[in-house]
Structures are given as C-alpha cells and as structure tokens.
Length: 224
Image (cartoon, rainbow, N blue to C red; front, top):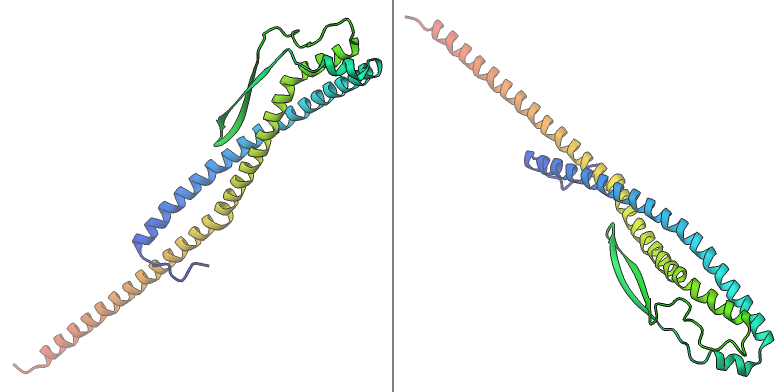
C-alpha cells in the first residue's frame, strides 16, 4: 500500500525510480558482500576446528609430561628449575581490513632465535618428562596465537554477517517493495489524471463544436 503522503507528481516519480535503481544496486552489492563474508567465515571455522584440535592435543601432551615429571621430581627441584625462564616472547597486535571487518593479526618474536633455547635449567637433576613438557608448550605457542586470532576473527565476521543479512532483508522485503508500490501508485494516479484531462479536453472540444454548430445554424436562419 502506497503511503498517503506520497505526492503523485512526475518529479516524485523520477526521484523514486532513481531511488529504486540505487536500492537494487545496493541490494546486489550487500548480497555479494554477505556471500563472500560467509565463504571466508566458513574457511576460518574449518581452520579454527583444526587449530583447536592441534592446540588441545599439544596442551594435553604438555600436561601429561608435566605430571610425569612432577611425580619423579621433588617440588623444590621443580620450582627452582622453572623459576627463571630463559626465553622471552614479545607479542605485536595489529589489524587488517577484510570486507569492512577489522580482524586482528598477532605476530610474535622471541628474545633468542634458537628454538631450543627454552630450557631454563640444567639437565643433571631434572626429568626428561619436564623437557618434553616445556618443548610441547613451546611448539604449541604459534598455533595458540593463531587460534586466538582466528576465533576473534570468526566472532567479528559473525557480527558483520548478521548486520549485512539484516540490511539485505530490509532492502529486499521492505524498502524495494515499498518503493515499487509507490511508483505503481504514482503511475496509476498520473495515468488517471491524464485520462481525466483527455476526457475534459474532449468535452470542451465537443462543447466548442456544438456552440460553433448552433452559431452557424443561427446565422443561416437569420433573414437577409
């Protein structure tokens, strides 16, 4: 149903037609954006699943080895061994724009480039299970950071997908049908006005012809 405040003029009709073209173009662009976001979102979800399984397996292995090491070592020796770490990790967080979504990017660097420089203790009084536990944690760190990055990206993309979906639905089911209905309403009104005008002109023409005909008959009937 067209709104009552719509002014049925040709200028308004032209404006609504331009608005309809813009709305349809915007609708297509938003649908393309939604589809691309969904594709990238699903890729991230699959990567997230793989990373989570890998990280959980690594943490489980580290915990298992740590429990074994703790069982074979005294608390004093274990505390001294892990008191002062030999490696430091520096994390840098940035962001990149993907389909209007600012997703996080985590990069890290270590104080030492040597991957084996993760043991802060000597090997004389410690268990090999502790070495395996520390090694497992060091190896799982890159995947853990990537997992955090992917999970946050999934959350942000899900929010953007929902916003885009609502906009697509608003255009598709509200705005575009309303503009089309208004265009139809104005077109019908203009056609109706044009027919009324034509009818009035025809009536005026008939009246003029009738008056002219009566005037001619009156002139012919006058005596010479």
